[in-house]
Length: 86
Image 1 (cartoon, rainbow, N blue to C red):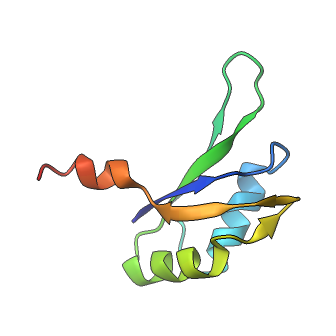
Image 2: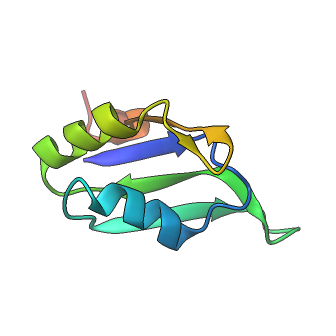
């Protein structure tokens, strides 16, 4: 399941984000979206977890958690569903 993580502190790294989610299960991929002009974080990213139950547990545990001074929002990536063809 692909998860969207919003409201990340601009100082949060991909490694820190991966570590947060690995506490809840296997992480297949972790991408922090970067601004092409500044090279800095845009404050959101994506985590893919192959096990549905792990992803659900991560959403429950991490949504609204304060990380580096920002209260992150974690949810299923809606674009993943849209791409599957209704």
